[in-house]
Amino acid sequence: MFADKRATRVGDLLTVIVQENNSASKDKNTKTAKSTGMDASIASFLYSPGASKLLTQAGQMPALKYSSKNEFDGGGSINNSEQIVARIAVRVTDVLPNGNLVFEGTRETAFSGEQQTIVLRGVVRRDDISSANSVSSSSIADATIKFISKGSISDSQKKGWFSRVFDKVSPF
Image (cartoon, rainbow, N blue to C red; front, side, top):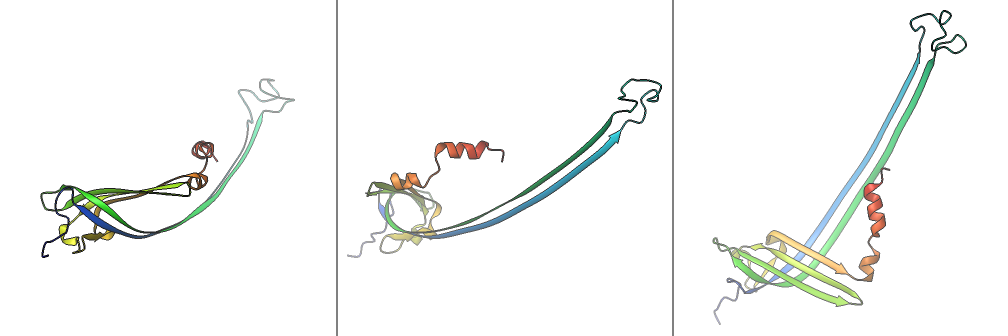
């Protein structure tokens, strides 16, 4: 009746309440321009053009005209937002010398041909564990929260292997 049911030892279970709201936004624009020009000719080479036919064409020395223009205009933006809400039971795998608990747990669900695996790892202080033997994800140190989805819907949201390779090697 008066026993403390909070996790304290290796093998004890603990409920983690995951409530994560993350957002990131990034906007970049790049614009460069370069113009180069050169106009050169040879007026004389060892002897005047009339005295020697060396390197001449109809009495004229060679001329060189060069022009180049290079422009680049690129940009991109990223807007990413995610909200995760879950309750996951995890198992204490180690108790550190200072009393902090190392835990790890997974949860797998499957429905409509989709499989989702949640992997949760981290370290929590005993003081952060509530009397209901639960802890908020914001109190977890070194937290790793992975949501891994497999199935036809998840596959259709990914680029194909050829597109991914082409994106990596494309010089444009």
